[in-house]
Image 1 (cartoon, rainbow, N blue to C red):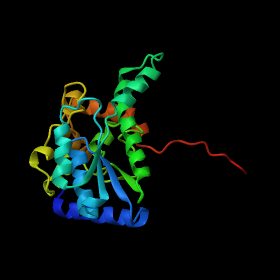
Image 2 (spheres, rainbow, N blue to C red; image 1 turned 90 degrees about the horizontal axis):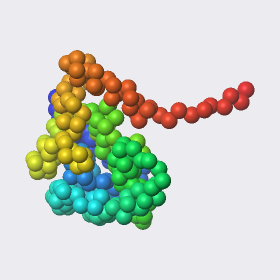
Image 3 (tube, helix red, strand yellow; image 1 turned 90 degrees about the vertical axis):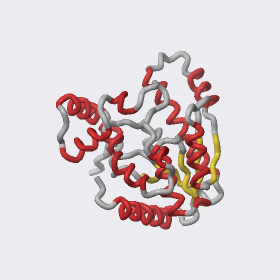
Image 4 (cartoon, rainbow, N blue to C red; image 1 turned 30 degrees about the horizontal axis):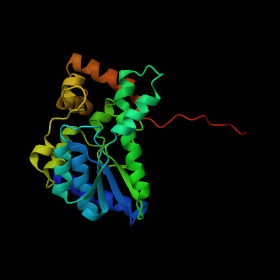
Length: 245
């Protein structure tokens, strides 16, 4: 875990400033606000680094979102600009267009995150000053592929990809966000289970295993299986190289 979370937070703030100095000195950061810890903490870091006027939080319920008030509380607490885009018509239209395809459960689960990423880029490209989309995935969830390829795994820059879940929480404690948002039980909001119940081990176990290689035999098998199965999400896209010799 982080020995000095405050110092790491300051490093993140400097990194954000440096990124925008090079990749968009006048650009606005665009971030999807789900109401969960990762997007909330990223938004807090962006607001501190760039100023609240250079951050836009986009709320993207798919129909009714049970915890939408948490998302609204985040943008209210941070004082950042925000927009609410309900993706339900796009989702229903996509499902209707694919009615002749026997969509798998995973395909149905992954359509909303991809629609949300398309929404974020539409917002970013429509800003006069230009926009850069923030990726909010953390190292722990990336390790087991707990993200959607070309959905929430996409973005122009990433703040948490080298931080484990427990480290993200440490950073969160250094922000002005309310504690209940930082320590909110992670859930995809789809199956009624917490993320930990769904994956079959705790984030604390996962973080410890990533750092030390130590875990119960049962947890190790589950983590290794998920990691190996989802490596394609972490590796650069393979591409054919033409030999012109």
